Length: 237
Ligand code: 6PG
Image (cartoon, rainbow, N blue to C red):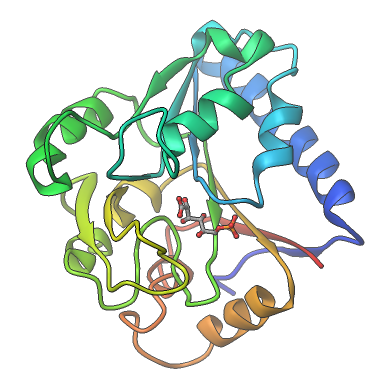
């Protein structure tokens, strides 16, 4: 199947411990083999404990590049900033030495900041070694929101690495409808794509996404249906 392995964990602690171990080993292997490693990271609530645990990993973090998967159009330091979230959770202790690539620019809109963000991301060697993704109950991953303006560019198989998104406001987006996101072209060929999902509603969303239906309705399907995407899914209640 194109879906790849699915692991159901007993609880969030077990999931965090196992994924931390496996991400640490993959980063260590990349550092050994290529002398550098890259890790693309999402925001959201599920990966918080993982990022905190990873930050203590004994790795040559100075040779690791951490790149954001997506960003809300707010300045670092403000509520909702994924950059701030990642700095406070992952880029602490030994991991503070990592090179960080954020997506927010001083421009007023993600559309205006896109070129600068594209240059930043294009400077990171690809494919990424790892990308950590989440899933919303609406079937979004990264900032690929259903029927958002910019979605077609975000889920295109080839093309730019970044896309500006204006999502329809929903419970899931909150006030943060303006986003800048990595695209399927940037993410699908990652050496490992780790999808972290927590809770019954998202497990149902993941199951629904595997069935028939339009990609625009559940954009995670753009990865599920991409034969390049080496997806591995971890779930906990
Ligand atoms: C964001 C995220 C987003 C996230 C999902 C899942 O900033 O909105 O990067 O794509 O991965 O919304 O979020 P949870 O981890 O809260 O389930």
